[in-house]
Image 1 (tube, rainbow, N blue to C red):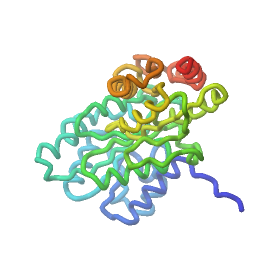
Image 2: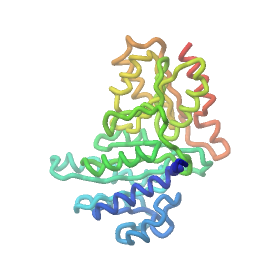
Image 3: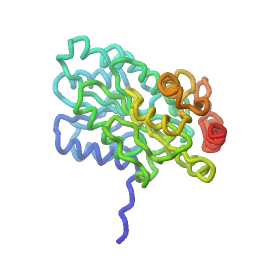
Image 4: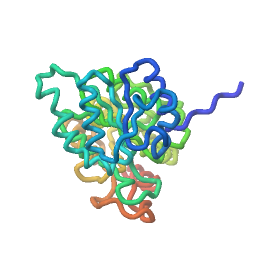
Length: 326
């Protein structure tokens, strides 16, 4: 019998949103051009026609207004899911996210549950212009009160939204732009995570632990397969970067004795630094080699034609794996 084709990530997200809206009429989508146009990446295509303009709302071109409205909706008992067109456009909404959404529950002694999801297309690989290919997840991951996820599959994307809607506190949900149109079935060797916020083992291995997230998961898996004859690499997808499942990472590193962390965003002050520091603090005696990190230079994202030299490539990861293992 012919196996059904896997969905693209964009189609999977669309299906998840539709399924959630079918069973819970408190869920409201809002963002720039998400209604009639279906979003700049067509992720919400057809949802306004299906659920109406009251539940799939085209907003003004003002990110601060989008998040501000969503906070008010949440306090009124609704379950808003926002879309910010590109992660470079998050900054106009930083005040609402950092000084309002992240603090409201603590400010009121935990008596008000703020259920709020902000979807953020992110990352390079599509040769976008300025502000359209950035990776700013580390900035918001450092903010107490915000939870930040960066899944790489439709299955994990749905799990993040389920977790966000079921538990109080705002969630920033980053989506890798360059995976939107890829058909990414779950890896055959993937080990199911022990809980919704745990790391996912995409490829078991014995020699090196490679930790990554977002669009870099496919690049990391390809690099691990390329060196399979020389190095047995265990690939972990963090999925959540605030909070990080440090225990899942430590468990793997204590077995392999080596760690390589790969991220698309700038190397400095990033998720990789947090993972590396935790391993150095809690698994130092298990290490057989220095911890290695990879990421972009500490510079603004360059013009589209120079993206290739800015974002970590498969060949770079292959070289790093061979060096760590040796």
